[in-house]
Amino acid sequence: MFLLGMLVWCTAQAYPVTYNNCGVENTLQKAPERIIGMNQGVVEFLLGLGLGSKIIGTRPLDDAIWPRYAQDFEHVKIHLNPDWWNYPNESTVMAEQADFIIGSWASSFREAYIDDEGNSKGLFSESTVGPCTGPGSQQHAKATDGPASADNYRTCRPQLNTAGIGTWLLSDACEDKTIRADVTALGEEFVYEEMRRIGNLFQVDVEPKIQEMKNDFDKAALLVSVAMDKPLTAIWVDCVSCCEVDEGQEPQVYVGAGSGTPNLIMNEAGLVNSFKDKPGLWVCVNESDIAAANPDVMILVDWKRDPALETKATWLYSDSKFCGMSAVRAGRFVTLPFSASGPSPRNGPTALDLAIASLHVQKGAAIATQESGVSTFNPTKLKEHTQNMVCSLKSEEVAYTDAAANVRCDSKTGSCKPVDDYVQETMTTASTAFTVGISWLCLVATAVLMQ
Image 1 (cartoon, rainbow, N blue to C red):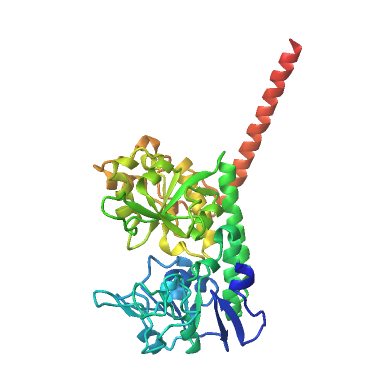
Image 2: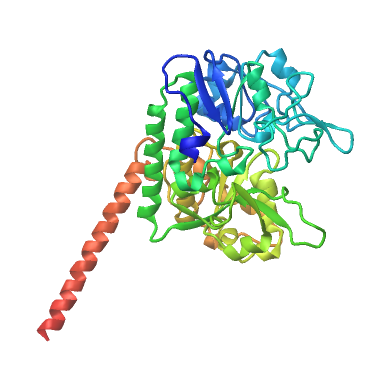
């Protein structure tokens, strides 16, 4: 369904270009020149495709822009909109004369409404492109023909397109969940196809970038497979305060589920998601389920709203139910920027660094970082931060001495190995051990036969 119906696009090499994105068809008469990226993830997606000069605005960043893209991002305006997730509002879109909007989430295109407290919410009203009604705007399960409201989830992509402002919603976040990309089934091909479709809109050759990602994904999978006897298990903790529960109900936490980019990145890094059987991109799970899963590694998403150390580590070390978890005792935490958790060309280096950081906390492996922003805590800093909390970091169980992001080298040194060197040495060691083992067995067998 994803490949054949949801995102059909024109393969012509000249404009106009017609495409169908998440059930909404549009035609671009020319290449967009003034793009607003509604989220840091999609901004970095465009930067990765070499389209930085066309980006004119975004909302405040979730974390630091990836250094590889920093120079191309310097000119981009940051817009504030406290009424709706700080997305650039309709006044900004019109004043900036945007001709294309790209978003990671359907909320990037939400119709404006007034909530029960009289506050303005959403983005696009009748003063610009509204009202947002009709099949393309009412794909969400909660969309109706009634007045715009918090419970009436309508989006305005068709109306923006009609007004000459092209739109793109990442295909794992379509309003209609039945036509969302099945990231689990597609695996890394999901990211490649999304890159090709967006590249086609701007007539950009994305194949070199795709090959770079394939190389990183292959290295990540090989790295863990040669270093570990069995795959490492992991839980991706996105947010510890985002799940609402009824009074008296066990607290829940927002984690990576089985069909989103977090699960894809874990798979490509050679890790097994403890909640891979849960449907959806993310899911709320009971805290006791996390403790019971007891994964080898905990992936803590690091972002301004919910920092990895101050919020997530504090949460884990402040509750006795987590004290017995091996990852808590040994400080086996990988920190990952929120901006790296969505589909983008950054996924390749992110998966590779996730594999590197996981082996760093599991075995103390000192493998050169790819500088994607993925890292670990410094164990000394973690020890100081968690001092006097309910759970304690057991220094004797900690396998590493520094943050993974600080392990850097271009060639092998006594304290650092590039990925290729580490893989080659590990494979050589394993081969030697196997040969020695076979030789010993042959000697034993010979001795038994001679008796």
